[in-house]
Structures are given as C-alpha cells and as structure tokens.
Amino acid sequence: MPGKQNREQVQDLCELGTRRLMEGRVSEAIELYEKSIDVKPTAEGYTFRGWAISFLGYLDEAIEDCKKAIQLDPEFGNPYNDIGVYLMQLGKLDDAVPWLQQAKRAKRYEPRHFPYLNLGRVFLAKGDEMRALDEFVKALELHPGDAGALEGMKKIKYSVN
Image (tube, rainbow, N blue to C red; front, side):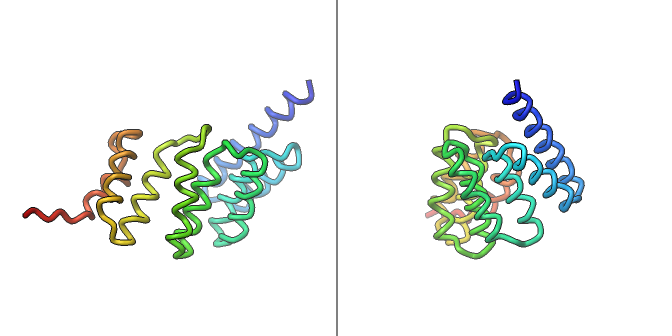
C-alpha cells in the first residue's frame, strides 16, 4: 500500500521537522518539510515549511507556502491563521483580519483557539478593546487558562461610570 506508506512517511517527516524547529534547528526543519513535500505535497507540509521559513524572517515566502497549503486543502485552518500572523508581523493588521476569520471557520484546525487569540491581539492593537475582549473570551472558552488570552485581557482598560 504505497499511499499509506507515503502518508506515514510524510507524517513522520513533518513531526521530525517540528521537533527540529522547536530545538532551534531551523535549516534542518526546513529540509525535513521539503522532503515531506517531495514524497507527497500536503497542506501540512507547506504550512509547516512556511512556519519554519518565517523563523528566518521570510514572511512573504511563508505566506506563499500557506497559500499552496490552502489550494491543497481549503478546510485546513492552520495556514489561514499563519497568514494572519505573518501579516500582523508585517504591520498589516487590517489585512490579517479576514485570514484569521477564515481560520475560525475552518473545519479542520487545531489548536482551535489561536485565531481568536490573534484576532484579539489585532483588535487590541487597533484600539478596539470590546472586540478584543470578545475574542479573548472565546479563546479562553476553547482553551481555559490560556496565558496569551489572559495577558491580552489585562491590557484592556475598563472604565466604570
């Protein structure tokens, strides 16, 4: 069953790539993701390669990899969120919003709370504290105790009349 072997090989390469990335071995991670794409192009392979190259500051290339991932599997939410994050890093907050909204709607996405957390950060940066609060609350509903959501909420100023 070559198809099953390819899927397992791709999954193993992506998992090893992620371990290498978490160890700070970015070039090795990129090579492993590229090998996974050579075995079988997948949304995960392109998304994770984009994530790895973003560590090197190549955000435009990371966005292109995420767009390739979306073409392969439009139901995979991670590349939408990642594009939103890369746009945030580029200072394009308004451009990030629709990508993050799409990540929230994706059928296949873990960790599900990330786009809410990132939208909260966008709205907070834009001074829209109520929308930010809504997003942080939803992130906490999906991932109770999330440090990023709690930190975002601390930055919101409440005014009591």
